[in-house]
Length: 333
Ligand SMILES: *[C@@H]1O[C@H](CO)[C@@H](O)[C@H](O)[C@H]1NC(C)=O
Ligand SMILES: *[C@@H]1O[C@H](CO)[C@@H](O)[C@H](O)[C@H]1NC(C)=O
Ligand SMILES: *[C@@H]1O[C@H](CO)[C@@H](O)[C@H](O)[C@H]1NC(C)=O
Ligand SMILES: *[C@@H]1O[C@H](CO)[C@@H](O)[C@H](O)[C@H]1NC(C)=O
Ligand SMILES: *[C@@H]1O[C@H](CO)[C@@H](O)[C@H](O)[C@H]1NC(C)=O
Ligand SMILES: *[C@@H]1O[C@H](CO)[C@@H](O)[C@H](O)[C@H]1NC(C)=O
Ligand SMILES: *[C@@H]1O[C@H](CO)[C@@H](O)[C@H](O)[C@H]1NC(C)=O
Ligand SMILES: [Zn+2]
Image 1 (tube, rainbow, N blue to C red):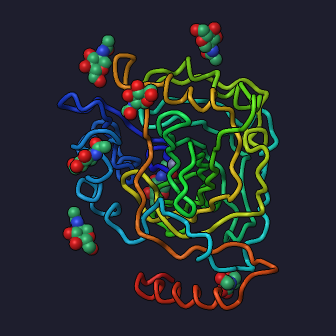
Image 2: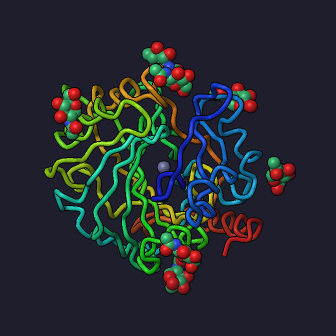
């Protein structure tokens, strides 16, 4: 999930040297400054080019991308320890068919912004969080998967991130990214629905119908009332998830994110998944299509999940010790 995507004060410019990548303002500072001053505090990054792809982020955005609790990670399900605090979430206005307001091509992703009043609490979170937006990560069609997290090495075709900010920050994301749990991200895998499911589910058919209106970076259109977040998250048991402390997955990679990664994927038909990598471009219509918009895996972190009623206590003890050692090494609190 992205700093770019979670801040409302993002700035974009064309990158120099025909890089086809965007210059993104260093928002922690930029949020406070007028446009003119922001150009001096920019971080040029991209997914595609050797000059600015994710292997360069720890160099071009050293402060956080080179940190010690970076996302995404591979989640090893057998190593996830039980935490009885990981109860069910309460989702506020996820059923509203007017909660989603706008869909936008940011040049790095497709982002959908929400009305105020959408939020999430429970789920072991320390307080209520306001939901700001969701965006997506993908590879190149259903055959080249591009989720950010992986589970036991499995990468899914796509991943949806709902970005949430502590309600007490009242929409001020500058405060959120300065707090180690200021943001809560909800990650949902998207998998190919089996059988003849062309155009299914209907909510995703509606959502993807907007892509042809936002083929170029910076374009956005209003979303008509009719689909809800619940409709898009169809079929997922939202009481089953992994939890760890990590970061934004795009520069500046701020280590401010409580991650929730749901175990069950959303099932979407192949033709709709394929639309993402065949419709939207990274700048204008003569620029490359937006493909492989995900960060590579980062070092493992301690992961927790719901308590299982039946599991091997021997292996659990073993993993717990391993995670304790890891926690000590990483200074996790
Ligand atoms: C499209 O963008 C590229 C760089 O991203 C630029 O060189 C080119 O002139 C643009 N084309 C049009 C038609 O705007
Ligand atoms: C990313 O950048 C690194 C170093 O600059 C380069 O070795 C690698 O090939 C690049 N990968 C892609 C997919 O461009
Ligand atoms: C990133 O951190 C590692 C270890 O902390 C260090 O060896 C490396 O030089 C750092 N890289 C940059 C670009 O700061
Ligand atoms: C559950 O939450 C309580 C209170 O925040 C905390 O003290 C405890 O360590 C948590 N349990 C686990 C297993 O993390
Ligand atoms: C994506 O897949 C298409 C169709 O298979 C292929 O033509 C294209 O080169 C691929 N793009 C990238 C960046 O790999
Ligand atoms: C966010 O909070 C910071 C720190 O208190 C403050 O300086 C800044 O003006 C706030 N930003 C907005 C947009 O209110
Ligand atoms: C999307 O584009 C189509 C055709 O160009 C147009 O008819 C439609 O009104 C547009 N939709 C929105 C929401 O702008
Ligand atoms: Zn994301």
